[in-house]
Image (cartoon, rainbow, N blue to C red; front, side):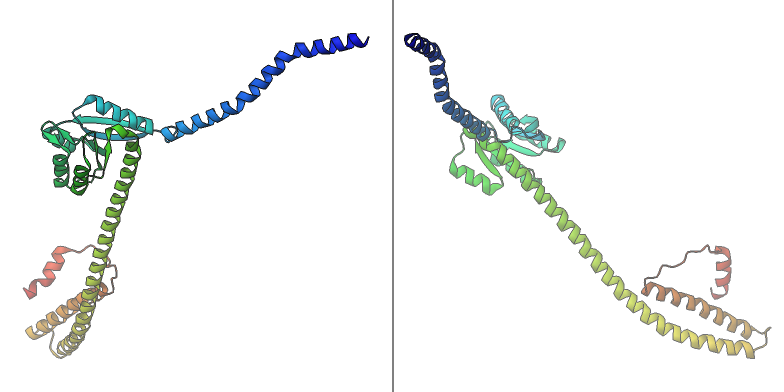
Length: 289
C-alpha cells in the first residue's frame, strides 16, 4: 500500500511539472514585459507630447520651394496637434500677394531658395510693419546666418532634420504674438485714457475761466438792469427814450440768460433742451440789428 501511495503521489507530481515550469517561465518574463511596456509608453509620450490635445486651427504661409519638405512640416505640426490651413510661395511677388490676401498665424520660411530667401522675406515683412511670427525652417542654415536672421527679425529657426522642435517653437511664438497684441491693446487703451484725462482737465480749466467771467459779467448786468429799470419808470411810455431803455433791459435780460448757460457749462450741468420759435426770436432781436 505504501508503494502504491508513493507511485500515485509521484505520478501526480510528474503530471503537474510541465504546468509548474510554464508558470515559472511566465513569472520570469512578466517583469521584463512590464518594464518594456512602461518604457514604450514613456518613449511615445516623449515623442508626441501633445498627441491627445484637441487640434488647433493654424494658418501657415510656407516660403518653401520643396513640396515634399512642406508636406513633412505639415505632418509634424499635425502630430503636435495643429490643424493646418496652408499656402506655399517661393518668390517675392507671390509672398507679397499672400501677405495682402490672407491673415496668417505663422510664416515658416526656408533660408535659401532660387531667387528668394528668408532675409528678403523678413525685409518685406518688416516694411509692412507686420507682427506675424516668422520661423526659419532650413536644412542648410549655419550658425552665423541664423544669428543674422534673428537680428533681422526672425523669431526662431529650426533645422529640417530636427523637426520635433517645430511644434513647441510655433506654440511659443503664437503665445508671444498674442501677448504682444494684448500689450499693444493695453497701451492704446492707456493712451486713450490719458487723452480723455487731458481733455477733461482742459475742459475743467475752461469751465473755471467761464465761471469767473460769468460772475463778473453778471455783476455788470445787474447794474445795467437796475439803471434801465429806473429809466423806464421815469420816462413816459410813449417816448423814444422809453423804448430805448426797454431795449436795454431786454438785452440785459438775454445776457443774463447767457451767463446762466456759462455757469451751467462751468459746473458741467446738462442743459435743458427746448423748442425755440425761430421767427419770434429773430423778430425779438430785430431792433438790435
